[in-house]
Length: 179
Ligand SMILES: [Zn+2]
Image 1 (cartoon, rainbow, N blue to C red):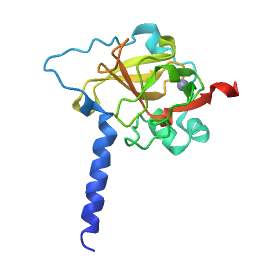
Image 2: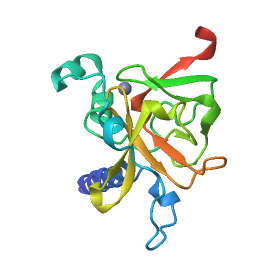
Image 3: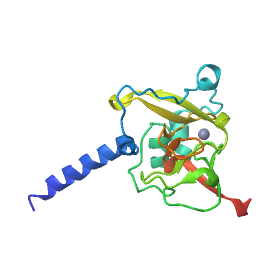
């Protein structure tokens, strides 16, 4: 019985580690390598059209969606509803409904999060340099509501070479046939 607290401690430590990396173990860190992903700057970076208070967001989002979209949380790897999901259709922002990704650009990266090699429309996302946790990463946000979606890395497949590592909690799938 006395080992249970230790196991719990180890489990929570593991999930904290997983929550922070968004599959960065897939990347081979190159010393001095500079990201070539262009951050969205100026007008486009401040174009969130939907503005709500935290209290208003809490009314329309589930606790998981709120933690990821509004508090820049990361769901634990291999737990999200869309990481192993292959239906044809569109992925919209769970906060505002804006079209973000489609099944055409989705692929299996092995990271444990839904991965896309491109956005449905670059105008609908914002790339922001994220320096939290001592790493420099490129954060992906919804351009319409400013919701946190995930990060983008340069280890994706052709034709873009990009891997958009996105939280399922930030997405709402829309089946093609239902339209
Ligand atoms: Zn949004």
